[in-house]
Image 1 (cartoon, rainbow, N blue to C red):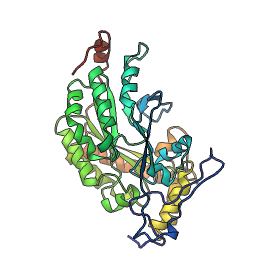
Image 2: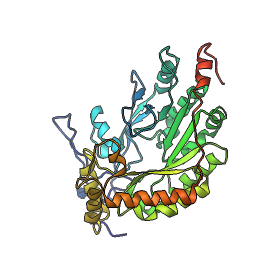
Image 3: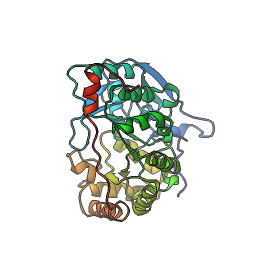
Image 4: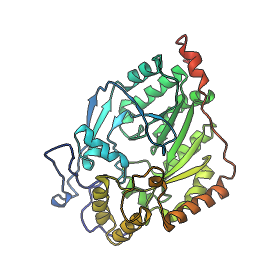
Length: 353
């Protein structure tokens, strides 16, 4: 790994604040004017009280039709995160502010219960989170995700979980209870087997070892767990696909799927700045390979294609995952949510508690 050409803020993904397209004014943080030994950008938390919490997902690329996010912004600081652009709608930059200005939806469990009790709701599975990680570090303090899981259990409602944090194991008691009624499915996101790479790409996520531990802890209890290798970044995470698949299979994952990196909106500027600082000797190669996956650009918004990429290199990556599944996940069990229990419990407003 090369030396930095420019200072890099410890524990942060983005090194700049990009302009908020909804704001006539903008702010920025330039780490070049600070000594990294005595400077750190602190995280701030703002409690908010939205009127709704469940969102319809209008994307054929996402398996679940509804999602909910207890937090906006994400401490994990993954430099490539597609959700960064959504922070503009809250008045913040997609850059450093996305990972340092976190909005905490304190009333999320109450809003969820209200939604699930409404006469019009049909019990369609809901994904936690879909935009920002429901188990980011501040969940340890606020416990909103845990309280939401209690609501799902109370109502007998199906829920999917996706996270990069081993904190999910804290809630094994509730997840096991949901699993007894076939109400929960878990995806753990792991895109590399090398923690040294993870530290740069995803600075405040759980280590790879702890995520594999979470896979094992859940799978040992029979809970359906898959691994989502997302995103695959050429020049950084694409060379360890088979070792990653092997480790996930040994931990008990039922399958592995992948998504190709794409740098939509402000993320292109954020990523380009970051890769020049963190990997100056191979920055050009990494960026050119990403472009090769998307028809010569860093982004692709076309449904379906945007997640898998296109061209010869995308096919090579896809073939590696095909081989990995054949070798390590030859006969993955089919999972289907139990959607009938919710209707049974909803009528008399009973509870599994």
